[in-house]
Image (cartoon, rainbow, N blue to C red; front, side, top):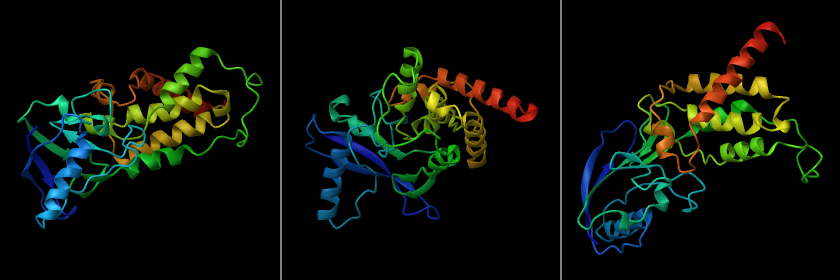
Length: 251
């Protein structure tokens, strides 16, 4: 298969960037999108040109580092899934493909297709830790958890922190990410002691980082590789409202 690529090239945040055209030829349909970029980079190096900078780690849809906007969609057209799980058979032979980095103001631009999503890390850090003892697993029946709560907590904990939700949102909102991080602990007894402090600190940090507000466009849910439901945003709002009342009235 052959493809016409338009790739965003930019040396750094202070330099001007532009879309540069490349040809990716003789690509197997079973090649992943990142492997296709690897192949293109090898050919660029042979020609003495600078390779395209992009991030990856596990290439299994777990680490969340492959932050690419492909033809205007965060992680590309094959949802749910991360960019590393996108295969070239998803495109037509000869297709024109535009590749850009995730674009959201709180994501600091680094180079080409690489952005720093440290803002998401700082939101998590603002939440702190749980007081529950770490180490060996407790006896399963010592702290009963309703199955529905356990299932919802596992769904929320599946967030890989890729930032696609913010990149896809017209407001660059991180509400889906933050709601997942707040909810998976708020749904479990181990997360109760710090419940109030956690949600207040994380929402405050989210606002300080410059993320926008949620206006229910549901783009975040549509591109989420982990299929996290936007209904968790409603839970975040409830948790925040209750925590605010408790803080103000000392309950």
